[in-house]
Amino acid sequence: MILISVILAALTWAVSAQTASTIVLTNDDGWATALVRAQNNALNSAGYNVVLSCPAINESGTGSSTATPKVLTTPCEFDTCPVGSPATGFNASNPRLNYVNSFPVDAVRFGIQTLAPQFFDGSKPDFVVSGPNVGNNLGSTVLISGTVGAASEAALEGIPSAAFSAATAAQVSYTTLTTSPTSTDTEAALIYSALSIELLDVLLASSAPILPPGISLNVNYPSTSSCTSTSAFKFVLTRINSDPSATDVETCGTTNLPTESSVVGMSGCFSSVSVFNASTKDDVNAATQAVVLAKLESILSCS
Image (cartoon, rainbow, N blue to C red; front, side):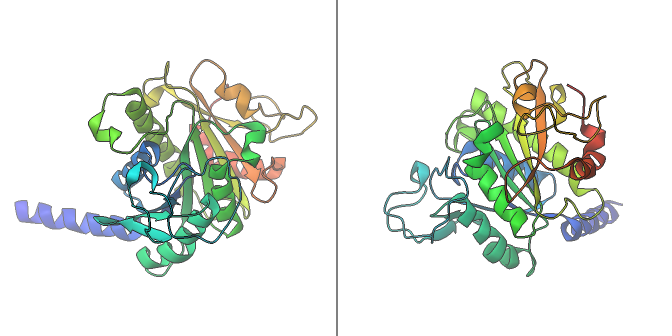
């Protein structure tokens, strides 16, 4: 009986490994931050097939800047690699953890074009997760956000993507996840990464295509100071920029979606989900919003 159980478990794992969605994980804060490593752990625990490709150092606020990766003239963040390290590199004990010494756009491009074929049997990834970012990216901030820039680059390369940003966050090392397991930063990282899994599970289980071509999502999480568990959070469909004259998809009794800034700023643990054009980083039309609404309706609430 025990042998049969072991065999069944092995078969189940094999099927899961074959059908797991492949994901490139990136950010703009750097490859060794607590937030991105917590997200990497959560994705792996949820059964996703993940490779991390992030900047070697903090590249926040660099938008869609791009440059050829270069040999490091300063150490990677938190001294995770020394001066003179190659332009691209990986963790010696886990080659799925990769840095790129350039901008977020270059890091995600390396992940899609070089790492994904290496780790995903010659294929491109099914999805790109950018973040969670240290701090929110709301409204016009999306234009300079490297987190949003990386998600935009993925969408422009034909890979559906989402940018995630978090209010409660600090630029701290991934080592704090184990050295300070009850700290505010660690608990927030665990909550935010679990919330991202909740959204991804629903989105990636929907019918193809996952998102319309050239379209990405901008997701922002509020502070965890009054929201101390994932069950407290609710997702709300929003728009990036205020436009009272816009006719958005009809939901929650209106055809003018609330702005992400207003939703994240409310009491009540509301997270915003905006649908944007990867080329312009602006809001999309009602028809495109409707596609995303239909896919995420089961987890969306009214603010």
